[in-house]
Length: 277
Length: 314
Image (cartoon, rainbow over all chains, first blue to last red):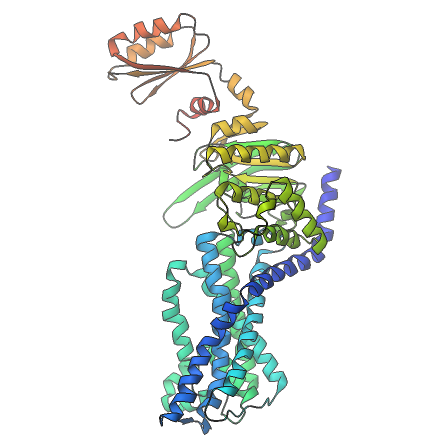
């Protein structure tokens, strides 16, 4: 019996450093996989904003369709929105798709679930690593917005703290959204979820226009307040294109924190339900 | 005692039904033992292993592994547990080497230690030529070997193997048995589930026979067979199965028949000593038209049949 107690004591003493090293191990694993797939990752992340900018800010002005929204040229309005979309899609691609696959088909998450750390930490690691990818994806949009549009994009960092806070919070929210979808949706239905959740929240996420101009469609302006993408776009507007109308910064940060809390809770609960019965 | 299970139950309850998967089992496994849970599908073996490996929460009861209560301290107890589940859980995005390497990293090994340990295991399991392959490029048998190597990479006290030979061809199964025996030589305690009685017989020091969530018998395979009280199992297939009662009474009265039960299309007799028995059986069954008579030595399957009246495969 004394040996049994001895083992228990060792296990408890090792607890805190082992949690950290297990978490670090998970991050290293994801980093290795990302490094191996860096080419496809860049293509996946860049393609959508590239085409968007090309069609709407390069071709349209040349064929006489140039338009301005809220007093700024369209390319300037679009940049923060496209960054928000890049962040959101990254979260879906890095968490929701692999998780749904791993839970429903391959079960390969099992070895990570059996790590010596609380199961919720495995889910949190997924969200953290996905947020790194989201930040990368958002940063990759910036050079595109500089070189593609026919009209100049007016960007200057109005507030670094706001930019950093929005980027990090938005990335975590998108990872949490990915976790919620990935752990609650069966792989066969993931396409459907794309159509009924991901596409609508993108189109209605104040990506292509600032929230303020929605005052012309009052009911929509209020309804979209439930959409976390709105706060990602508006937050990036506040930080990067202050000339374009945007919501107050404090409100944006608060809304992103609430989104993170809600989606994070749903996501982790769903994850636990999938791995522990 | 390295694994101790007491009063363990698991009830799955939803709106429509209540299923008792594990129904109050007590088991203990000694250090270094190769322990088998034998039973048909749905006997509760996988649920029992699921609880031991922190993946299923019990309704009642406790499991202690290496002195740690797995329900109260799942994260800490996972250090002492290695698992090879029924399905292939190798990380498809990583090479064979990386599967082992990152598993070691999850358990806090330094880079050098993780590399060293992975190389040693790949050599031990004869996988050196495959280190840069991805899991999908390997045969089922090889993937199973990688899974076992990975499961013991962090030097767990107990390795749980859930239906390790399911889906393996006979040759891979024998290779897997060799790998499991190798683990015992290293002093790793192994708990495996199986519904192949040959596997339990061949590999295990002790076997718990399970059915409907309960442990029906627990002993060394040889003892289980001896305790059957019969050295020959006779299966009699009859042309006519109506009105068998007189035949059952007549055969049951024979001194050498220790037990008797009806099976589809005939009777199963448990006999101790067969001298002069066959002619008597044939004579007694003459009016029923004997279609086939088969004699077998007892094995774990017949032990299971004796305990439950059913076939392992039914």
